[in-house]
Image (cartoon, rainbow over all chains, first blue to last red; front, side, top):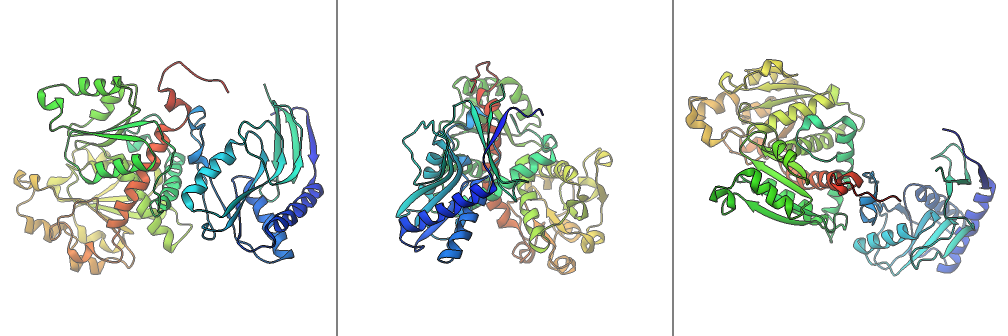
Amino acid sequence: MTEPATKVVMDAEEISRALTRMAHEILEANRGRAGLILLGIPTRGVPLAEKLAAIIAEVEGEVPVGRLDITMYRDDLRRQPVRKVGRTHIPAPLDGATVVLVDDVLFSGRTVAAALDALKELGRPAAVRLAVLVDRGHRQLPIRADVVGKNLPTSATERVVVRLAPTDDTTEVRISQERA
Amino acid sequence: MKHLLSAADLSRPEIDAIWELAEEMSEVQHREIKKLPTLRGRTVVNMFFEDSTRTRSSFELAGKWLSADVINVSAKGSSTSKGESLRDTVATLDAMGVDALVVRHSASGAPAQTAQWVRASVINAGDGTHEHPTQALLDGFALGRHFRASDPDFDWADKKIAIVGDLTHSRVVRSNVLLQQTLGAQVTLVAPPTLLPSGVDTWPVEVCTDFDAVLGEVDAVMMLRVQRERMAGGFFPTPREYTVGYGLTRDRLARLRPGTAICHPGPMNRGLEISADAADAAQSLVLEQVAAGVAVRMSVLYHVLSGETAATGGSKERRSE
């Protein structure tokens, strides 16, 4: 595969700094860790949620962290080849909790909309927040993130790729031109 | 995956994908709200030309929990009893625009034939003495869970499975043999000589007519139902004699290795092919099989009905994203 023109927009250190700030913002908005549940959206949202939970654990103590697969709730299942469905793990009862959904890139907002649908059937959280590492704009739905690692102006044809160790061999955010 | 007609059509990655999703779906089974929006707006028709409560209700629940619209057509009271041919019946439903036909028929090959006539996806829910692929998938799913409980990294190639009973008339055995062939397990078929299917020597299995000889060396026994209607066929002298030779009696149960899984596709004839002690034993997977049935069929419906190729159903229209 020939690599198209790409640019690293966040390196490992910047990502680490952004995550530290995001963890503090989550705690600040929630006034502590009470009632917090972090749910990562597969694939890259899961390690991000775990990293955020680890930082929160250092500052204030443990918070439950799990994963929410939203494949079965997507509205574009019929437009793509059969998707592999991932695991869902809800670490604590959602009723009355403050759920923070964690994803790598916020783009159209459809993934988050699907996640909200999925959550609705698993319980009734007191509040749902959204934390993303990169907000690249081009929303198609009225959805915004509460906590953002980096706002990244992009054109709709560009691709934003988040890579995280240990899932990937490096930790970086890269922007590249979509292959034609 | 457009159709599911035979267990032989499934590759190992496809089987694993179906089981992986079934694992997730069995969690949905324990939720308060057993509903996923995945197949909203899609229509599944259960066409059961043969009586079946368990398979039909299992497919019906699977479709409904995935939000598909499910309708049931039974042979009794349908236009088939008025003399309409299978071809016209399925073509009529197909013309209404349904997305999947789940077909149970007493004629071997009916679902495969149907698949050539219609635009919709076809799932074989048991045809004659031929195949019953979703049963094999759920048997394997329940067995896999059982084996994994004692050894998370078990390999199918190390497992020995005995399938015991009326092999000639069983579609369950054919699908299981084909599925286990892909998985790599060693299968031994056990039956009286009168109930061995012709051509069994060409199957990738060992054949044995002495149940007692294999008892101590298998990891699972799958008992097949003795169909009452076969008893008059002269395949074995008396039910009592069948039980003595091939039933999983209390005595045989005691001679199985500890932890040997016991499967039965149901409905069971207690006291005939399986004793009450064996059916209710701790290592009996009978109820797990039923529970797995819904989860596995949800997964099969997902794999057949979601995705681009299935959605366009052979039509030329395609959206570019």
